Image (tube, rainbow, N blue to C red):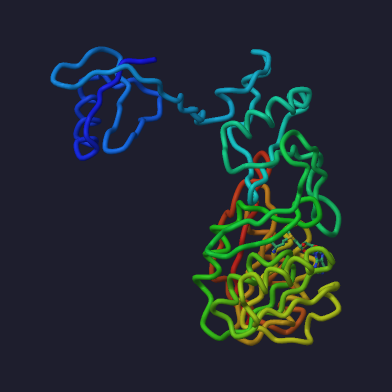
Length: 331
Ligand SMILES: C[S@@+](CC[C@H](N)C(=O)[O-])C[C@H]1O[C@@H](n2cnc3c(N)ncnc32)[C@H](O)[C@@H]1O
C-alpha cells in the first residue's frame, strides 16, 4: 500500500501537474481510476488534498537502448554496436566475433528495449552471390524471417533470409521518386521485392521490374497486390535477356557490386533523353571518377552520349568505402 492523493476526475490533470511541480508524485506507477475519482501515488503527505492508502501497479520502464540492459562482461561492452537494422518487426545486428558468445543475451536485450521487435538475428556473412543475400543467425525471439516492412508510405512483404533488402536506402528511394515524372516508363533492372518499383508506380505509367531471384519476384507480386499498384510488371529472369527489348524514360540499376557489367543493358534500354540511376561501390579516394569513365566509354561504344546530372554518396558500407549514386541522362 502507498500514500495517495484522491481527487475528482475533473481536477485530475491540474492535480497531476501540481504534484509534479511539488516533486511529490511517485514515479513508475500507473495512476488509478475508480468511478468519478482518480488516485495519484505520492512520496509524502501533500497539504490541501484528501490523502488515503492505496495499492498501485508498477509501470515497466523501457530502456532507451538495449545496451542499458544487456548483460555482457565489461571487457566486451565497448564492442556493443550502437545501432542495427530493423526490417518490419525483425532486428538484424552485426556483431564482432568477440560478441558472438553473448548473442542470445544481446538478442533478449533488444527484444526488451523495443516492443515492436519480435525476432533478432545476427549477420552470419556478407551479402553474396547473384541474389545478394546473407546468412542469418537466430539470436532471440521468434524463429521467423518473413515480415512486412513499411517505408515511404508503402508496405513491403519479404523474407530477410531469401531476398535482398536494406532499410537504409529508403531516403535514396524517395529521392529518385521525387525526380520521377508522371506517366513515364520505368525499368527497375534489379527490382528485389520492389521498394523502388512499387514507390515509382505511384507516378509512372508502367514499371517493368526484373529480378533473377524467384523469391524476390514472388514477393514483388505480393507487394503489387498489397499496395494496389497494377502498373508494375514483374519479370523473373536474367535482365540480360530482356534489356534492349524495351525503352524506358527512367532506368534504376540497384546492383552496386556488379552495376558496371550491366551498363550496356541499361543504356540500350533508355530512351533518348531518359535518365539512368546508377549505383556503385567506391573507395573514398576515387568516389565517382572511375564509374563515370566506364559510363562514358560504354555509351560511346553504343554510339550514345551521356550527360551527368548528379552524383552523391548514398551511405558508407565498409571502412572508407561508400555506396555511391550517379544519375545520368542518355542522349
Ligand atoms: C542489391 S539488390 C537490390 C534490390 C532492390 N532494388 C532493393 O533496393 O531492395 C540486387 C537484386 O538484383 C538481383 N539480380 C542480380 N543479378 C541479376 C540479373 N542478372 N538479372 C536480374 N536480377 C539480378 C538480385 O537477385 C537482387 O534481388
